[in-house]
Image (tube, rainbow, N blue to C red; front, top):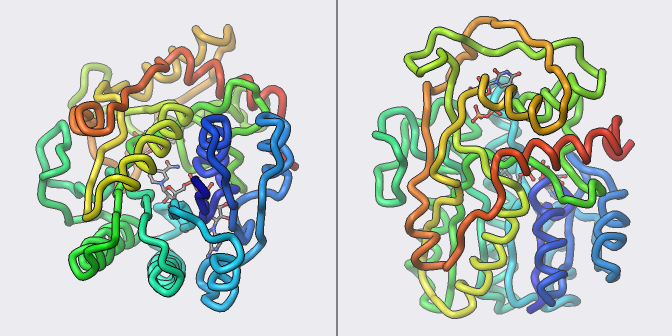
Length: 337
Ligand code: NAD
Ligand code: UDP
């Protein structure tokens, strides 16, 4: 299949591009590089040994996206393009609503006009909000998001659901990611946050490589066994494989479908630090700080549906996640720069 990856130069998009190309699909990457590097395209080509079509464009720009879709005629779109920093979304909510919602509307409009009927969307466990029991199941009520980023995902899911209800030709697959970490085993691509990392694993990796002095663990007084928050961490290559399954599913199924992509197994912050130390033989200096505003104590996925319906399951464990993160970071101490 020809698959257009909107935001395909980013962390998850680049790993998905490799997985899709290695499974025989053609990818068309469209990115404005607002949170990624053009070097990513070279790296994808190096890993796969294939040339990849890449366009520099803003997904909000309907004229540009129409022209790219007309030229490339994709069978399917995967929509990764979005702003994703929770804290920044609180400070700049308008930017988040504008970019995340507009990219979605533009893609749907262009798809309709170009007769492209399949789309897979990067959603997030954040749509489950603050009041659901754990583990999270796809059928649970959504909402009560704790920040504008989460609300953009909530709203985009609604837009996709309404669009699928109104158009019997449309296939929409919503993928709710839990906590993607790790990197491609080659160490050629990985997560390369701009500025100070917001997320745990890239922060640990930057402490390990000497770019940061120590990790601050946000709170050790949560009602968990070691007092730190627990999350469902998933290897980015397992997540990438979930997109392959989702694209194949969208090809054969019309309508609106939602899948959690997680392992179903939570780890605490301290367990992640210990796993990284053990996998890589490196000590991570840390201290405990205050709780981070908006953090939930713990949550993880019920990953049954993806297993049963998509035939997808995770194959990599926490040791793989920690080892591959370090392999990427030590080979690229300053990311793609
Ligand atoms: P990322 O920032 O690495 O990738 C997003 C890509 O989209 C970047 O390359 C960026 O340059 C591009 N982009 C943003 N706005 C654009 C626009 N208007 N036009 C063209 N390109 C644009 O993020 P990621 O971690 O790869 O996440 C991909 C998607 O998955 C995002 O929608 C994110 O919200 C979602 N998600 C990520 C996580 C996570 O922990 N990484 C968890 C849940 C959901
Ligand atoms: N965390 C931390 N220090 C950091 C970054 C994150 O202690 O510098 C904790 C955070 O409080 C949460 C967990 O690590 O409990 C995962 O955080 P991340 O931002 O990676 O994902 P999210 O909280 O968005 O699921």
